[in-house]
Length: 465
Ligand SMILES: *[C@@H]1O[C@H](CO)[C@@H](O)[C@H](O)[C@H]1NC(C)=O
Ligand SMILES: *[C@@H]1O[C@H](CO)[C@@H](O)[C@H](O)[C@H]1NC(C)=O
Image (cartoon, rainbow, N blue to C red; front, side, top):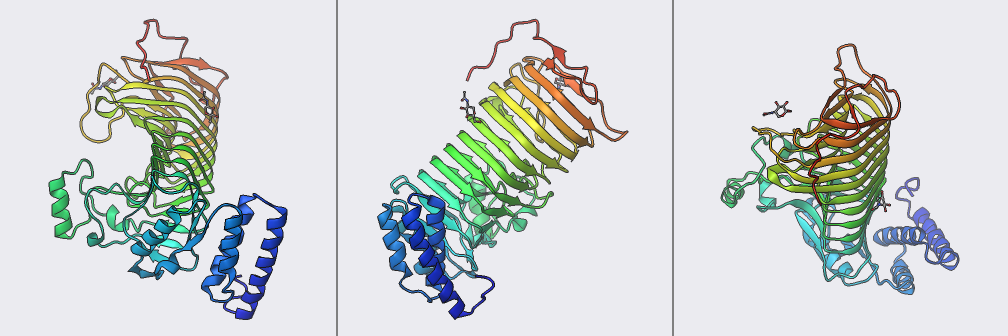
C-alpha cells in the first residue's frame, strides 16, 4: 500500500484484491481470528480514502456472520487526527458504540496522530471481546489544564471481559514535561491537587500511560508505548493476560518510568518484547501469581523486579513466577527481589532461567532491606522469601555479581544457584550473602562460598498468604 502512495487507481485495485482474498479466506478459514481482523483493517482504511465505499457493507456482513456487529472507526465519530484538536470525545463515542456490540472493534487508523486527554474505556456493562485496533498514534496533552486532579492513569480499560489492544500503533505520553518536575510524587492531598490545577501546574500524581483494571482476558500485542508520564503499562486485578510483541521506549534517565507493572494479577504471560525505560522494565507487585516472562529484552532500565514488597508493614504475597530467556543490557540490576523491613507475607516459587546480562550493575539480587529514599528501621518481621532458583545466569557485570541480603528475623530459604557465569572488571565486588540458605548446584564463576547450605537452625515462623 505504501508503494502505491496516493495513486487512487492502484488503491482501488488493491481494495478489490483484498475483498477478493477476504471472501476466499472466509470460505476457507472460518474462525481464524487473525486473518479475519486483518481483512477488516484493510477495508476500514479504504473506506476512509473514499475509494471503496461499499466495503462498509462487507465489513458489517462478515462480522454479522461471525456473531459480531461492527467496526467503529474513530474518524467516523469526528476525530481529526491532526495532533492538535482534542479527539477525546470522538474516542469516547466510538467506544460507547463498540461497548454495546459483542466482538466489535474500535479502529484507530494509521497515518493520524490523535490528541486524547484522560479517558476511561469502561465496562462492566460492555459486551465481551472488544478489540481496540491501534494502528495510528495517540498522544497525551501536555498542558496542565487538560489534566484533572487525582488521576491514576491517562488511558484506562476497566471492568471488561475479553479486551484486546493490538496493532502497529503508538501511545505516546509526551512525558518529558512531567519528568522535569522534581516535586515529590507520593500521597498528594486533595488540597494541593486543587491548588495545582488552578495554578496551571501539572498534577503531582504522576500517571500510568495505559492501565487495565479488574478485567479478565486482556491481550496486548504489537503496539508501542513511549515516553510515559510514569509507568508505561499497568495491570491491576486482572486475570489471563497475554502480552506480546510490545515495545516500550523511554530514556534511561526518565524518573520512575516503569515498563510493565503487575499488581493483584494472575496468569500473566509477557513475551517477545523490548523494554527500555528509566526504572524497572517489569515490576511484579503484591497479589501476583502464575507469571511467566520469556524472550524479553530489557535496557536501559533497572532490571526485572519482584517488589518492593511489604512497605509500611503491609502484607505481600507473590508466588509462581518464571523469568526465562531474558537479555538485560546496561541495566542497574538484573533479576531482583526487594522487600521492605517490617512487612509480612511471602515470595515463593521463583525461577530465573537463561538470563543473559551485559554491563549490568548487579545481575542477581535479593534485598530485604529495601529503602527507597528517607530513613528506614530494621523491623522484627519481614516478607518471607523461599524457593528462589537461579539457573544459567551469564554475562558481564559492573558492580557485584550476586548480592543476597536476607532478613535477620526471617532468613531466605531454598535459594539455589545453578550454572552462574559472571564476569566483572577488576574493580568489582565479591559475591555477598547475608542469612541466605540454599544450595549451590554447580560450581560458579566467580566462586560463591557465602550461601549457607541447608536450612536455618531455628524454626522460622513463615509468612502465610
Ligand atoms: C504456575 O505458573 C504457570 C505459568 O507460568 C502456570 O502454567 C502454572 O499452572 C502455575 N502453577 C500453579 C501451581 O499455579
Ligand atoms: C539492619 O540490619 C542489617 C543486617 O543485620 C544491618 O547490616 C543494618 O545495618 C541494619 N540497619 C539499621 C538501620 O539498623
